[in-house]
Length: 324
Image 1 (cartoon, rainbow, N blue to C red):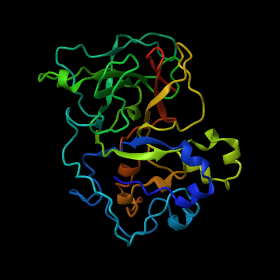
Image 2 (cartoon, one colour):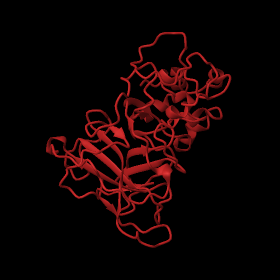
Image 3 (cartoon, one colour):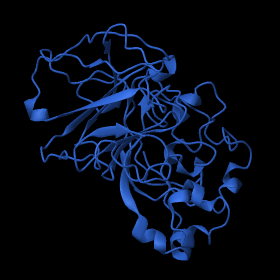
């Protein structure tokens, strides 16, 4: 999937942004049953509606936004991803699908304290959240903080409210080397307690795209932010699921264990764009009728319902992973 290009006039007027740009990989999860615009299933038809989810005049609302708006009648070189014709498999990069988990390796369990301070009645099996293969995701680190190499990242969480976890479930990760994975993989992981159905992801395949990301408005240098018209800086930071880039909110995000400034690994979101980031809608989806019954499958493909984006950080000092 292809994000519209950053408006060159913004960079010309605020050249300081160029030095702040860093790469991120937008993951573009899309449901296996909904397909991708222009591909096999044909879901989300409604091209040329003009109004759609953002309402009448969406193009005019984008005036002054940091991204150009594609001309619906003009051809472009965007590659339409292959249709998501099968559910995610263990060999795919995905959200909510099966993990490439060795059959003889114990499934991870959660023993964190619950919100009311009580322990789980029994250790709770985690839910697979995402699996990323480095060959699909350019910004996925291939070396952990201890110097060990890996090329598969697996993210799991416990869909229950826990003490000190305000953004979402308790998260664990596994880093693996694809060459070390056995042929005998776990096919039926144990099931546990689920407190919120909105913390169970709908299976999605990924359509990764590397983009240039910029800080959120409140993290911009004041000398730059104060020169911008109101609202212009609000959409600089890439929304939705992404690896690397900038957090969606300001802060230093120190490691809670050793205090070292942490590196952003992954952003987990319940939407791919909203009314502040509509200019990040991929070119392939700009003509969709968002008011159609399946419109939500593109804006909120994973089915998650979170109070805010979940940011997963890794500490380059002690190697710990933490959520903010």
